[in-house]
Image (cartoon, rainbow, N blue to C red):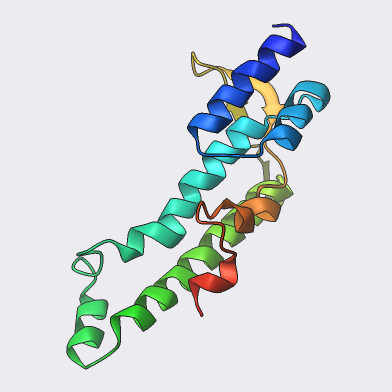
Length: 151
């Protein structure tokens, strides 16, 4: 696909995702061949689990420990901040490990991995999604940073 058409397609897709100023992302994808759209979609999806899922009504209904804490007088908003902080740390640690690419030796077995973009048909494009942990903080669609999650 010619660069101009690729850039226009990316602009439309980022716009549909609510990204107002995607110029740098589009340039990076088109000129540097980095899978910025795939990175954005993955990180935004993970961010939902960190920040948004726990604020939904009934989110604590499935957690007996949370129900006990609420029954004992814990503040619901304090619990939301706690759960968000724990979820953020778990996602960040996972992304950091994925970004490391492996070369892990567990019981004498070496293993590695890579997170890769896939095409519309599900087959790998050959473009790795790297540095994911570095951009997790930028994914809050409300424009907040991570500190707002637990303060």
